[in-house]
Amino acid sequence: MKRLLLALVIIFSTLTQQYSQTIKIVDSQIEGQHMLITYDIISDKPKQVFYVSVFVSVDSGRTYKEKPLQRVKGDVGKNVSSGKNKKIVWFIFDEMPELEGRITLSFDVRGEVKPKNVVDKQLLIGYKGSFTAPIGLVAGITGKPGFYISAKANPRNFTKVSKETNATDVPSGWYIVPNEAESQRFSMTVGVQKQISKKAHLYGGLGFTSYNLLWETQKIGTSADKEWIKNTNESFKSYEVELGMIYQLKHLFFSAGLTNYNKKYSDITFSAGVFF
Image (cartoon, rainbow, N blue to C red; front, side, top):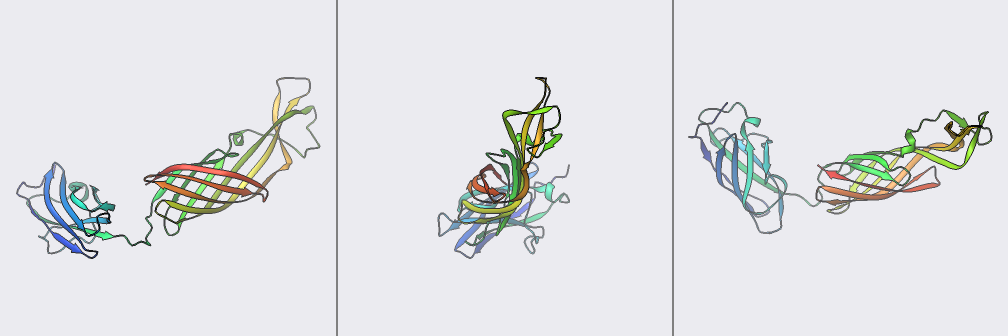
């Protein structure tokens, strides 16, 4: 197992950037296979949040790696608030397995204020359904704009249908069971999302829907032989449009909207899931 010598020298760096904030590394220590960096970030605005990244130098601070460290966790990345005793854990050998022996490292912690017109890119995935198609999924990415894709169906969509009728002709030897009708519905939509506030996103999409009206039929003279038959006069394939709003609650989201298909049918959609 590669190990850095205990004589490892750490050079603390202090960085003052625009927006009147000061970032100061106050401690750093090796704990097993990772390093714990403690720093303060002081701002004139107490509730200010920052994008925080950390850079490393292996030549006593003369040059720093072009890209920030990736194998880190803690008070790093987006939405880090100002304050003292912020901590970053760096998994040394996951990122730089070549390090060994006596090495002089320097760390540079940087913070940037996010401009107001910048929208975080986040992956979202979750459940999506409607009253007529309650089984479904949605996935997408927020941004400016963001995009999504969704699909939904109802349980009857998986019913096997072997016969069709135009509502006047019924297969010989069979009859339609009164008051026994069900529908099959499947739809898929793609669309865009636009963030309108810190927690709210509008979305709109266009897609395809398939709707089949099923009648239950029974073989004449029996009580056991039953089959579902498709009514072709009442079945169709058409476009679908939808509009709605997504509400974000930390890493969770909830949404509600309205969808219309075949120009005359409307349905309420709802979804819930997580942001990554």
